[in-house]
Image (cartoon, rainbow, N blue to C red; front, side):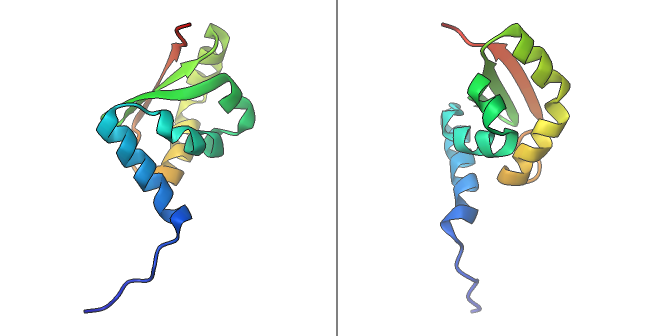
Length: 99
């Protein structure tokens, strides 16, 4: 039986976080990946809220941010899937934070 190369924690972490989010439905565990995928500026104004199947619901602080991010949804989804793996997130939905 051939042994595979050991995996680094960094390479395993996105899959572990995605699995946690998928099992619980809560996407807050994806915040580190969201920040890495979208950058600090966007992450200051938004955060993963819920994962329903392959739909990631993102809470945003204002309607303006929802509009900006909606226009960038395809690019953001692609960058996020680079971290999580192909097809993990097929849709991004943006909602205003409930305060």
